Image 1 (cartoon, helix red, strand yellow):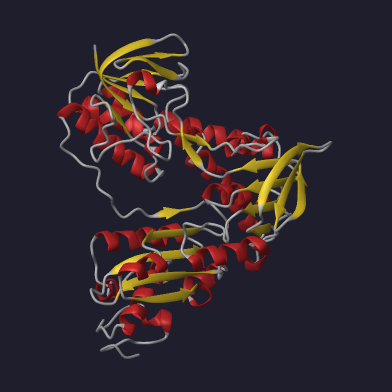
Image 2 (cartoon, rainbow, N blue to C red; image 1 turned 120 degrees about the vertical axis):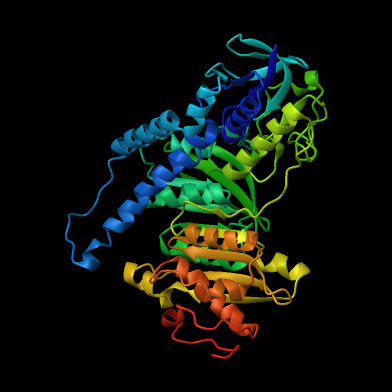
Length: 479
């Protein structure tokens, strides 16, 4: 019998299989498709490759400002797709985790179709593979949420968008969370006419309010029509050239039409084919697999990790959860899943990123100060011609510790990740302010924000190398 059977070969599943095998368990990893799951084949890897192409187009159009003359750049989409597939294959082939899994003797069953429970300890795949295991870890990930709207079958998902073989002339993107904004931003750069629809009062609703406001401004400037609080969808209809969306707001009826409609209104657990009732595995109120702090499901020998549980649906968190689930499956429930600082960023133009608490969340529990450094006044962004954006720090007035960082603009993710280290370390803002980072850099913008916050708190930061950035010296809380 197999000791540990892992269903799903995305980040959570791969790490779970690696950890279980490393602990000495006879481990089998089953994947309905190819190794790597959504992250390698449909998520961050191919999306980042497409986003990189859109960045290259943007950068090429800037060359004239620096005395470099070229012809107007144009996009050969078929060549781009070939490059994306090359990147995906390269990542999948050279994944260090895959090499470790093979070295540890994990049995990997790829492209065997969806798995389902036929007994609590037995699964069967669509390809007819039947496996019995002492412990099972469910890592099947998520899927785009479907809406009960007439004509919904005429719409596409973000997965369909990444799989397009040509750039559509026009596109409606419904849902302006991270995924929808990525789709809109990338295809806008490729030349599609984009309309972005958000039912709520603002796009990127989980971001700091200042970030989502600035992102909406930037998207509109780039030519995207952004519709916030647009109303409720009545139906989708097929037209001669694409799809029409009918919607109602305040009793008035409206419609919008495009060659393609992409719906990105949420992410649901991919459990439909698992036949969880046979195993006795329960779902929570959100329809994700219900787990305890040790990632055990309602059945003690079955664990779950990654997007299927509805926890933070990001690759680093999925990897962490896979490690925890496998550790507990092999050694017993000893290791709880601990919440950690989770920097999050996007592949949009412009980038945006966050680490820690938003300003509004921080105000609910702390007396805070905030500092904002605008990119139009920092040396590196001026050099690079990337002056849109800002870095915002949220600091606890009493403890003087950094609670949150929110950035929009060039290298936003890089800046937020440095802030995440400071938050995780419990660093005081005056300590952060005294780190003499290289000049001129994007990370230096974060330290400048720390200097400003320290000044508001009346903290002494002494000599700091970033005074040349701000044009001020902060000493004994005075500038």
